Image (spheres, rainbow, N blue to C red):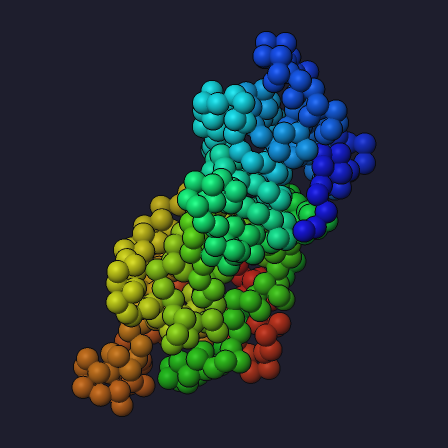
Length: 471
């Protein structure tokens, strides 16, 4: 296990020097039974804090941030009435002052000495957190070892971004309690940060020493204002290319993908992992990023992660909807990237509601109030493509295409074989020029024979950033 970080260590690590202002009022323990008062006094002496949480505000690389920090050495970081009220007051103050909020937890959950009244406070803390989120303010959660019980099942699981330290025990029921109640040990490794990240419950595993950089990068997107685009859109027209040649080109493993867009034309990118509900699908990426200076939520289909064994399934679409919801709640523009050979066709996909998830993506995207831009980067096949397409502004590269089925599938329906796929592609108007003429696409980015990944990525993002700046 890594270093056990206390309150003072964390404040010194994350906040700029001499910037911390404590918000906490002294705790009155006089009304507690004598034995419990003795426990609280001993805990305070051991921890160096008067309760299991410390709250306040400070600066992270010059940006004001509110913080709620658990102190595990104070009765295992447990949350009693005084601690809960302190947290609620801090969250409400952060909301009133318009501050991002960082919570860093290390707790066994509700304080058993205070029973149900303390247990109920988890709901009150959650109520305050959701009011903070409803105000469009960022809520970041950092789970330390250990975080279990009511803390993880309330305010520890409500972050816009949630990370945990390496090897941290994170779970609903503590393993000792599980073993005592069930007479057997909890399966090894299930309640570890790495396992939860792999299953899409949390976004990532991040060393606590890297927390300042993580917070800085996140707030650079969520708080810092846009800057004027630096990249200039291309004004020329693409050289004519056959429709079928475009289809084949976009199927190449060497084709520009969403990851190259972020590599060459984005800054401050923070990838988010999974749905936060136990699903993770690498065929879609969700990230907070800045494209040529414009902050946004990016939801993109990663063509190279979509294979016969890992197609674009329902979980990927649920991840996409998480990104859409984040954009709306955080009041950030949404940029989607379409690049898919099609959604998963299987029993598992049908039973996982793939059609419903496509419909819900379309419904969500078409009703967002924030600016939206969709980029058809390469393949745009079927419902999987349509799920991320209907933004207010739609951009396509000149070799991109959009069709209800793969051209081969259309050929089978019309001709009974796949041999007529090239002529079906041309007849159906799947190419970027036809999409522009039909009003489906608003801007076509001309591709040049000499383009490498970097030059084409920057050309695409130039159009996107100007569209966002003008929104």
